[in-house]
Every structure is written in C-alpha cells, then in structure tokens.
Length: 467
Image 1 (cartoon, rainbow, N blue to C red):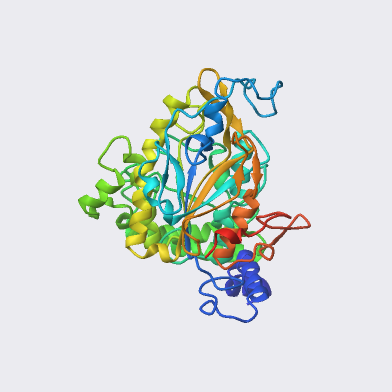
Image 2: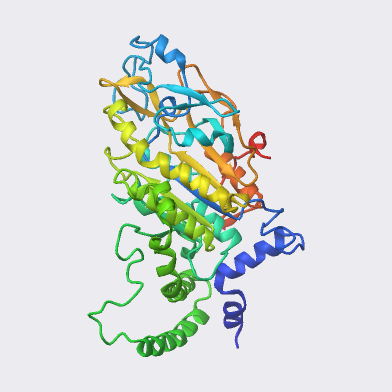
C-alpha cells in the first residue's frame, strides 16, 4: 500500500484527515463522552431545529411591542431620502394593526398573530435587538446562515456537520425542509457547504412529494436495476473509486460522492419509515395542524423535523415561505392582509413542535431556533405595507442550555434600529456553537491562505440567555 492509499483508507480522504487533525488538536485529549459529544467543551445541545421565516418577519407586528408607533401614527418622521436597500421612499409612521398582550410569568409581549406561540414564551429566550448589515434579501439570507454577505461560505448546518459529524449512519446529518411552494432566496446556496467537503451541505427533502428523496429507488421502468445488479455494479464502482482516490487524495469530491451513495443505500431502509407520517396518532396530526389546509405544509415539515431529530439527524432547517414577493414574510403590500395568513400557517405547528419536543424529553438536548433575515420599517410603504429594514429584528431560542423566559437587548422606540444589547448573526452563531460544545474561535479551516471560521473575526456568546 502506498502513502496515498494509506491516507485515504485510514483517514477517510482529505475531509477525514482534516477532521481527525481538528479533533486531536482541540479536544485536549478528552474523549467524546467526556465532552458529551462536544468538540472543545461539554455540549448541552446535540441537535438543532432552525425555523427560518423567509422574507423578513416584521418585529413590531410579532414580538416587539411599540406603543410609540400608535402615538405617532400617520406622522412623517422618517428619513427624507431612500436608504440603501429600501424598495421605496419611507412613508408615514405606521402603527401595528394587531393587538399585543403580555404572556407568561416573563410578561413577554406577543402580537395576536401568534396566539399559540404566546402560550410558550416562558420556554423561550428572546434576542430583541438582532441586526444585520444589509437590507437586501439575498445577502441577508447568506449572512444569517453563513456569516457572510457573499455566496461561497459554509452555512451553520454545514459547519456543525463538519465539526461534530453524524449521530446516525442511516440519515443525513444536515437536512433542509423548504416551503412546499419553492426554495428560499439564493435557493440551495443558502444551505451550501461552501469550501467544506460537499458531504456537509444540506440534504433537501421535498416533504410534499411522493418521493421526498429523489431517485432514492430505481424507477420501475428500469427492470434491469435489480438487487443483484446493483450489488455487482457497486462492487465494480468501489474498485474504480479506490484506484482514483489513491491517485487524487486531495480531491474531496469523490469521497463525498462515495459517502453520499453509501448514505443513499442505507436510507433505502431508514428513510421510508422516517418520512411516513401515517404512523403518528391522530392527536399529533391535529396538534401540528396537518389536518387543516392553512397549516398542513408547515405542520407536516415541523412533524418531520421532530421525527428526523428523534432518529439521529443533527441539524434540521424548516423554511417558511419561498423566494419572491408573495406567500412569505416580505410584506411590502399590506401588513394587515399579508402577515396574518403567513403567521397563521406557522403559529400552531411551531407551538406543537415545542410542546412535542418537551413532552418527549428531546428538548433536554435539542435547541429550537426561530429567526428571519431582517426586520421591517416602522414607516408605511404604500397604504399599510412595510419595507426592508436590517436595523433590528427578533430571534428566539428554546431548549437545552437556554435560560427560559428571558430576553436580551432592545430596539429603539420605533423598532427602527437597535438601542442596546445589539446582536449580529456572529453572536447567534457563536452562542449556538457554544451550546454544542464548540469554541467558535477554534473551529477553523484554511482556505485560500486564510483561517476561515463561521463567525469570521467577530462573535460573542450571549451569556445572558444561557442557563
């Protein structure tokens, strides 16, 4: 055996060698059991479910109550010019058309569009002063997922997969459940593995399709694709791959392709059961709203997210809304007419997911994250729409390691800019990685002469919301 073959077979290729080096360098001799599955320190979180509201969910119409908007309603106090990224000139101050109330012992304000989530605010920790660097959907979606405004960088799910690996051999480590009506802004680029080995990119599952994983099984029209022929073909392919890998040990694409085929073979046994929601009892379907047209799509995907995490998937993204200016959270035309329907589609399923995770004991080592790419303006666009605003928005988290019923930071009186406790995606990512036993400053990969990391040169753990 030559040196190239040895490296390939013992380290699993370039990606395996890099990961083995990372583990040896940063674990300080501690085993995974000592760190509870973490990389640098004991982990509190083993898996993450991220709920992403695509389009820019309006904070002052959901979780950030601003009575000053009602007092100044109709007054022209905004910028005279059109700020960068705005799609039109700011209009007059627009009060929220929705009633707010305080809920729980924490007294968290919640809009009437979220009556089901409102019942669970004492399980949540709110980041009330999130901020981003852009008012444009594509770059903002990249930033909230990868920490960079430009494409080509690994997202949070990919970094997590790279750092910690899988919890099961039978399902993907990182799964993406897009809206049934289409992919979000940037399409698959938002859940890319960037310069990390392709095996760490998000596996897109079309939950509303008869074949959620395309081409997992051979089509019936190919009668020659039998079990015996597949076995013989794979045996020949293995020999060819081994020869190629020995000659090209620095090319991670083949390794990723091999692992993808191996996973696909295992998923032929595990995926049909995991994706079969018919085994869930009636009361679970009713709780998630899969029996109602309004909540069926998002409810089904939230239920599938729970089932995947239950079976060992480490990171699941559930998206609300496709790209474009319809059927998502990009409410330029009318907050009163556009926000309420999209909120109703997700509210009951999210509350059911939180309650279900809690009842099953999964919330003890699972992190649930609700976020969006930016907020909306306190100024009207048209009659009662709102424009893009990266100045402030809201994120909440619940589950393992979270100090329930707390909040951190606040926006100004109009929810136009952050006022104190400003947090960027870097801080959110650093906090999530910390809960998973990862030091965000130590998780690096050398790329084009730079030690790249998810948080770039930024990031602070938000200890105020941690237990």
